[in-house]
Amino acid sequence: MNSFLRFVLKKVNIDKRLLAVYCVVYFLWGLGMNWFGQQVEIAKFTFWWQVITCYILYMIPISLVLRGMAFHAQYAYGLIAMGILEFSGYALQTSYAYPDNILDQWFNIRNFSLGMALFFALYFPLGNWGVDKIYRLLFK
Image 1: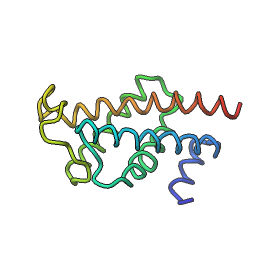
Image 2: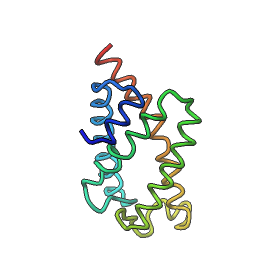
Image 3: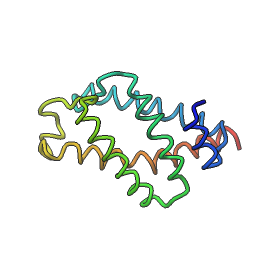
Image 4: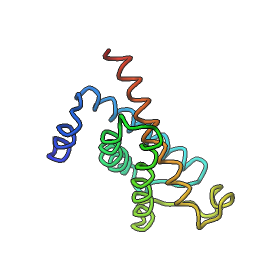
């Protein structure tokens, strides 16, 4: 386990079983969303393993820090986190937006990344809620 992950676990005082549930849920969620984005030709990761870097190494630590906050607070902080992720993904060309995709058509190309950030910011409150439900079902 790397030192950053140990730091996060210590700071948020998290059970390793809960962390395992986060990893499974977010990994499957990331694979599913990447697959969906490719199928409907909205966007995709350039490499499949970016699901690990984005969903597990980036989004889970943020989710852990935000859990327990009100839905709107998780969404607001999540919006900042996703704005940074979306901006850097397209700026570094590690994410690919299909030309003239449905979001470009609905909102125009200038609003694509903003729309993605607004949507994916919901992952933090919804992810925390879903993982908590699964964890309680399995371990409580």
